[in-house]
Length: 186
Figure 1: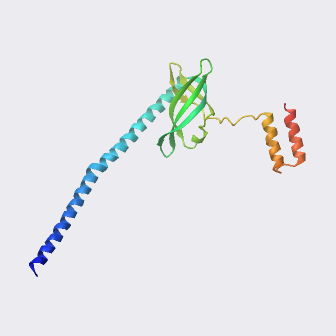
Figure 2 (figure 1 turned 90 degrees about the vertical axis):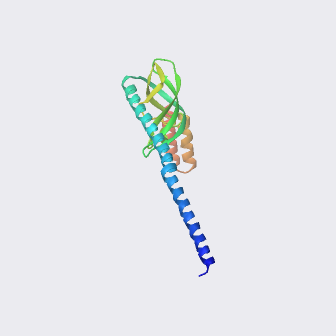
Figure 3 (figure 1 turned 120 degrees about the horizontal axis):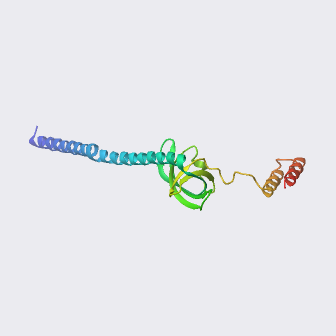
């Protein structure tokens, strides 16, 4: 073999060793420095949120025992951006109407069961308890009842009846009988 072949092989081996060393340093720095720092950030944020939620739950239990009763109407609902398997965090703006007192608005953040989150819509009403000394402390006592649920007035019922007849879902006799029932209930 010629000397030039040994030199070429030496250069190739040196380049390969350099690549392996660079990759080793990269993976060491990534696995030992960068990745743990990222994980710590996520874990710390999650733990802080969990501790706040646990404290809020304890505060809510206390309010349920000692708070004043009121009815609230949901004015605004916003997703707070934190969700677990079972719960989602919502920011609620409520118009609170105490039984004996002045109405007030409050903005509160609550962990809501994902199976009930769809009920939290503007206009829905729910029972709450509040601390008279600190109106921003609110405990939800009941699930919201959507504003659209409730007795329909006679004109709404007659309009709905007309739509059913026009679509052919009820016949003329059924239409007349139900229309008379609605008119008799006035």
